[in-house]
Every structure is written in structure tokens, then in C-alpha cells.
Image (cartoon, rainbow, N blue to C red; front, side, top):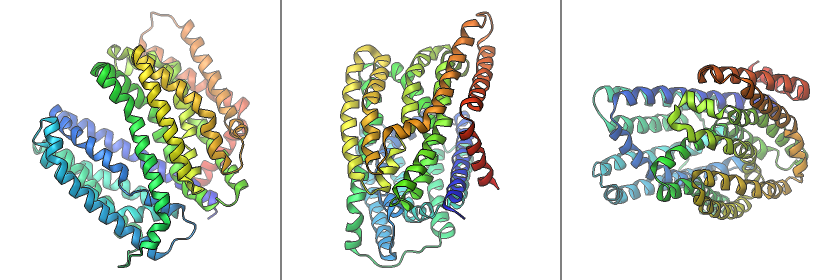
Length: 481
């Protein structure tokens, strides 16, 4: 199978995994919400603040190092495996030690045992990290998808069963733990053929230490920036404003989590394979950005065009403020859906140090923007975030593009047609909104706008972007053949 065919099949299976897990999680959440009390979810939420933060360091960047390396020895793989297991033990012990202090901070003593049980997930997950990285390196996303979906499904069954039996918060705890255990078992014993050997070479570890530590540093900063705005809003503007902001932010992140992240997960090992052929790398990257833009641009501009109706129908009038935020977040999500792909360039070209330094700069810019924006409420924070993103957009592409000898204009050309079609769709939505009678219900209005958006984007794409559409359909046909 050619590299392109393998990549297309990988994207297909990665998408199936993402969609399948989301469906299972959504159904499970609905069932558990009807069975458990809010305090159970609140207790688990407190625990996940700690677990989520520590998950940043789950593999110390070693997974990406395995995928990025052109050649990798069994000695290095085994050494990384034992480093990951040792670190998993270290984190588990750390959680045991800090659990009483976290519980005291929240004034919730039940949290101690919850954290101690959940800490086992770090040790369990560490066993399968290297195996998962090898599967991704070899583009075996079909095996990954099966393991991820099956473990999520079993975890959901465990959680629901325990909830029905009256286990309370422990249904959520053992749902997460059973998912982690089964996933690790499937990856390490059934999906991957590699087995660690009892060998360790510190010199081999040193060859990936620089890469891994820079990546871990970037991930830490990224986590901080992703949560700094919520921290500031919660502290200075209150819970209600934070609720509006959080909901709008989650909607904005949807394309990044379900389109850009899925495709980038597959393309990173592909880019690592062809990193020495700059022309081939450039062509592959431009194809990827064009495909992402084809999906995410109409999603983000579409949500701008129907924001008020969408929020009123889906969430209710009490969430009206979210509609205004989505208008600001539309262009922000559009930019970030493409800019997020640059991480694969840094990593494939073995320059996580560049990514870390640029991330440090953008973190400072973002936090300053959040602080300034607080003076005008959540609209001010969102607007400042958009302005900061716009200021950093050009250098954000220019710096990684230097690694593959590409100009920013080449990328803009690859997304030009999807952007034009999406803007025409947005114009159509605003035009129809103006002529729609005000007496019709919000549900009917949203249905009409939804159909207008699909029709206008489809027609515009057939007129102005026919070549790319035909190419994408060809890829889909090849991946499913």
C-alpha cells in the first residue's frame, strides 16, 4: 500500500475511533446524569483537575519521539518503555501523597480515596504508551481504533452497571479506570507485536531527551494558556460569566478536536517519514490544510451565521450571551484549525525547541490579552483573544514554514477556495436571516438557515472549488475501497 493510501486509511480509522468514542461517551453521560446526583459528577470533576493536569506529562513526550525517529532500535524502545513505567509509578505515588492536601483544598475528604484509586491509571496507561506510539508510527490506526472504541464501550458498561447498583461516584471512577486498563492490555498484548526486553541504556534515552523535554514544556504551556482565561474569568467575573464563556469555547474547539486533531494524528507519522524530502513534505502539508479548511471553515463561519438561533434552540434563551461569543469565536476557530497543524511540522523536523520558544511567546501575549480584555467582560476577553491570535498568525506560520522552505502565501493559496466558499455561505445566511419573517419560530428559522448553509456552500464549492472537491471524493473512494 502506498504512503498516501495508508494515510487515507489511517484518517478513516482515526475518524471512526473519534466518532465512535464520542457517541458512546455522549450516551453514557446521559444515562449516568439520570442515575447519579450532581455531587457525584462534582467530586469526579475535582479529581480530574489533578488527573488532567498530570496527564500532560503522561509520556514525557516519548511517544512523539518514537514516531519521529527515522530509525529506532529495540534497545531504545525497551529503555523508553521502562522510563514510562517508572514515571507512571512516580506519578501514582505523587498522587497518593498530595491526595490529602487536594481534599483539604476542596474541603472534601471523600476525594482522598477517589484520587488514590484513580492514580492507578497512570501506572496502567504507562504500560501501553510505547505500543500505541509504534502502531501510530506504522499507521496501524485500524488496530488503534478497535482498541479505543472497545475499551471505551466496556468502560461505559462498567460505569452504567455500577451506577444502577448505587455505587455513586465510584461508577465514574471505575469507568475511567477500566477503560484505561483494557486499553493498555489490548495495545500491549493483542494489537502490537512488539514486546519490551529487559534492557536499559541511558545513552539511548539521552538521544531523545531534548526532543521529549521541549515537547513536554510546550504541552505544559499550552495547558496553562488553554485554562488561564477560564481561571481569570472565574476569579474576576464570576461563575455565570464563566459558564457562558466555557460553553462557547467548547463549541469553538469542536472542529479542532474532531477534524484537525484527527487528521494531524495520522499526518505526523507521515510527515516524519518524508521529512527529508522538502518538496514532498510541502505538497502533503498543503493537501492536508486544504482538506481541513474544506471542513472546518464552513463549520466555523456557519456557526457565526446561525449563532443566535442555534443557541436559542439548542441551549435555551438563558444562554443568549453565548451567541454573541460565537460570532467572535468563528474566525478564531477558523484560524486555529489550520494553525494547529504546524505542530506536526516542528515535531517531524525535530525542532520541538522552536515550538517551545514560540509557545512561550504566544503564552505571554495571550495572558496579557486576557487581562486587558477583562475590563470589558467576557466579550472583551474573547475579543482580546481574537486580536492576539490575529497578531500572532503570520509569524505562527512563517517560523515553522522555514523548516520546510515554504512561503505563507502557498498555504493561503491552498485554503483560498474553501475560504471564499465559506464567506459566500455566510453572506447567504445573513441575507436569508434579514428576509425571514420575525413571526416564525426559532426552530423553523434554524432549520431553514441550516439548509441554506448546506446548499450555498455546496453550490459555491461546485463553482469555485470543483478540483479540490473531486480530489477529496477520490480520496474517500480510495480509503473505503
